[in-house]
Length: 206
Image 1: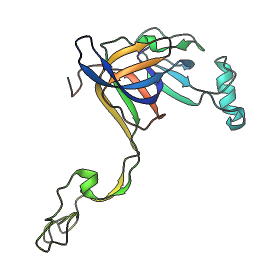
Image 2: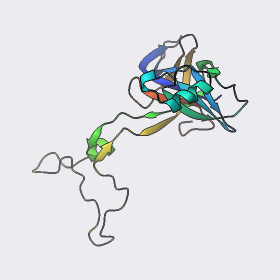
Image 3: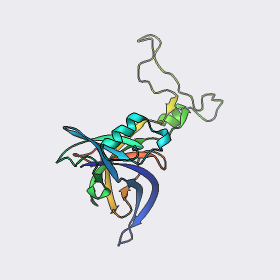
Image 4: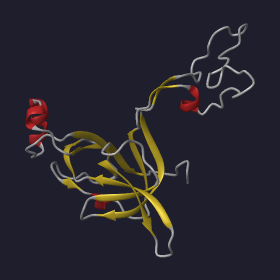
């Protein structure tokens, strides 16, 4: 296995023996149950749904794997070695300290924002009678091509989108409490669902 479903608990810091402080994100990674095995992928389930909020299809899918309750989250991960049995439990001990991982989650929603907040535009002058403090400015020439080019950075909805952070280092693995301590920040808010996978190759941070 090379990945797990988890829940972001928040951030803290770890102290090394030489006094170096490392900011880390604490992730409750697993335990996940194997709900489906395919030729080149495996499906894992995390958490559990209340019976009143579970459909018959979801309950039937869970019972095939030997589960009494349907998982709250289902996600697929590619298989790189022998597939575990249906209904088997995958825990955080598949990771080791020092490994490089990537974490996928949904970023915090910021609502409708202007270009200064959304893209870091400098804005206009703040004095001398200026009336365009945080405005976009010109968005296209009038003669050619006489239209706004696709992909132009403009005000709009910010955040609440899937994002993968690469090149994160596992600082500590607490198998007893199913906790994973990852160096740096990961996308999402507290208690948000995240996917933690082993980094396949070099990342842009390596």
